[in-house]
Length: 165
Image 1 (cartoon, rainbow, N blue to C red):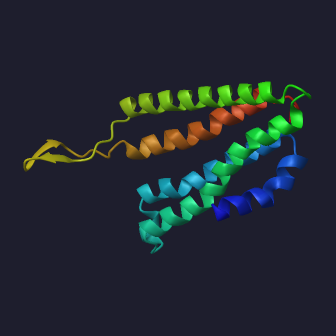
Image 2 (spheres, rainbow, N blue to C red):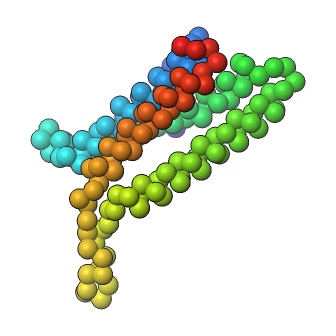
Image 3 (cartoon, rainbow, N blue to C red):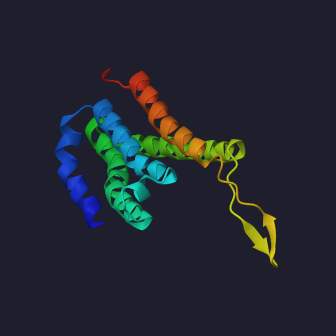
């Protein structure tokens, strides 16, 4: 909570002074960079560096948390800045609807990626392995998620940015 508030306070001027596209691209780049430590953990980079996995996850969560809140607050800020007088409520409802569509699309993409890249934990029932563990496709899945989480938003931002970077 406190880290997120500090992040919002420090980034407020950046958000207000830049155009929408620049802010969204910055947040997309930061989100991508912040997802790389988890991918690196798959390849045991934390072991090579002598860092415990829990430490990597703790630091990653602490750094990523402000950007999650900033992305949510950004929607409210954009409505406050760009909505015409008397239409702010309508714009907020529209932005909330678009956010829900994006979340649903993300959920569908997750569902389909999990069907394409099968990753399973070992399940033991009554001392018998009912599902064998299989992490062989996890690295590919992580890279597809990282790349698509970067490429899709960048393409949409560039294509639909009203201020045309």
